[in-house]
Length: 122
Image 1 (cartoon, one colour):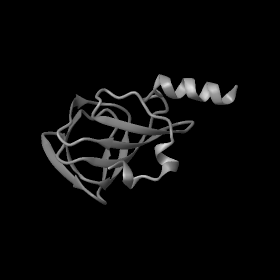
Image 2 (cartoon, helix red, strand yellow):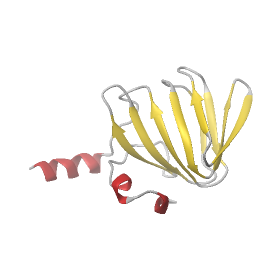
Image 3 (cartoon, helix red, strand yellow):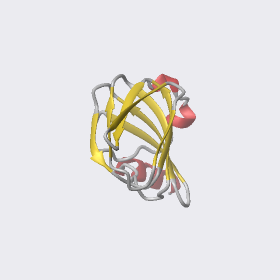
């Protein structure tokens, strides 16, 4: 799946994720964060909530459940989860998506990325 993303994206900093089956490349903004996600089939995200989230599926298929309804999203589909809305996710296939979060501190860079940035700067 990573072959769908060019090197200019895969070279972005990786984020800390709750599972080894989720990989994310971070674009950090002043007031929000954007992440290119690569998620393996079978991954389940338990119910959680956070700031508003908008996304688009680049490839694959997954479902989001909120307000007692399940929605399936496929390549080209967009989705929006309002701030504070409890939701869960299930990845039916491997998925590549691009998500924007209305929060500038939801994700942290992986420690290895920070060390590498410091080496480059020195």
